[in-house]
Image (cartoon, rainbow, N blue to C red; front, side, top):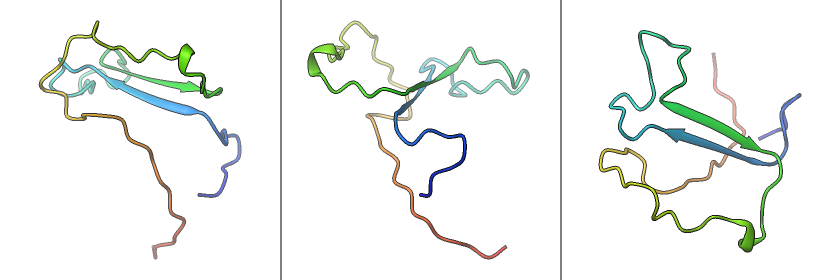
Length: 82
């Protein structure tokens, strides 16, 4: 994907959704309400394993969460007719 003006060229973008919320963070009555989700961007990528949290046993497991695991995005540059 070509670089976009005023957008970073590296970093980590993380999406968090409330696993207890059946609409996965969407509030149709208050679209600007962000209580059910959070998006964080980290400019610096931490690669030192000693500085990472890897034990998440302190978190309660949610059975209804639609996404299990972490995923990367792969972009392909192509054009479609309008």
